[in-house]
Image (cartoon, rainbow, N blue to C red):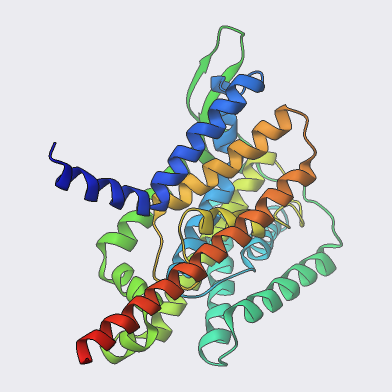
Length: 341
C-alpha cells in the first residue's frame, strides 16, 4: 500500500482513544493471563461480563450526559432509589411484574428530569446540582428504609434467566444471563440512537458548542431533559438488574460506584467538556477497569489499590482533555489570525 495512504490512516488510528484502549487491554490481559490462574477461563470471562453489566448500562446513560456537555454524579443514588421503590411496590403492594418494572424505570427517569430542571431552569452547575441530588436521594432512602434490605423479592424478579450455558472440562458452568443480554441491547440502542438519529446529532452539537447550537434553533432545555432523563432511566434499569443478580434489594448496594463508571467513560474518550465520545470507547473503558480489578483480585492485591487506579484514571484523562482543548483553541486562534492577516 502506498506510504501516503498508509501514514494518514495510522495517524487517524493513533488519535482515536478506542485504538489505544484496545492495545492497552491486550497488554494488560496478556500480563494477567500469564500471572493470574484462571484469568482467561471461560467461566471467569463470562462472570466478569455479568458483574460489570450493571456498570456498563449506567455508563451508557452517563455517556449521553457527558456528550451533552453536562455531568451527573447522582446516578448511583438514582439506581438505589428506583430499585428499592420497585421492591416495595412488588413486596408491599403485590403489583405484577410489568407495573413494578415500569414504576422503577419511571422513578429513575423522573429523578433524571429533576436534575435537568435544576440545571436548566435554576441555572445550577450540573456537578453541584447532581451532587446535591445524590446526597438528598441517598439520605432520604436510608432514612425511610432504615438501611434494611428487602429479601422477599418475587420469584419472577430473582429467578435466573439463562440464554446459553456450557460446562467446561473442569465442570464449571459458563452461562450467558439476562444482565449480559440487556447490556448488549442497551449498548447497541445507545450507539444507534446517538449516531443515527437527529436527536443524537443535536446532543453532540449542543455539547460541542452550546451557543452555536442555540443559534441554529436547537432546543437546549429539551435536550438536557432527554439526556438526564435517559441516564435516570438507565440507572433505574441497572438497579433492577442488580437486584435480579443478587436476589435482594439493598439500599446502599449501588453506593460508591459513581467514580468507577465515570472513570470508564472518560477513559473511553468521553470528554468532560462535551461533544466528544463513542459507545465502543466507553465499553472498552469498562472492560479495561473490569480486567484490572479482576486481575488484581486474582493476584491477591488489596482493593484499595484499584481505587488508586480509578483516581489516577480520572486525573490523567481530564488532563489530556484540557490539554487537547487548549491546543485546539490555540490552533483556531492562529488560523483565524492568519486568515485575517
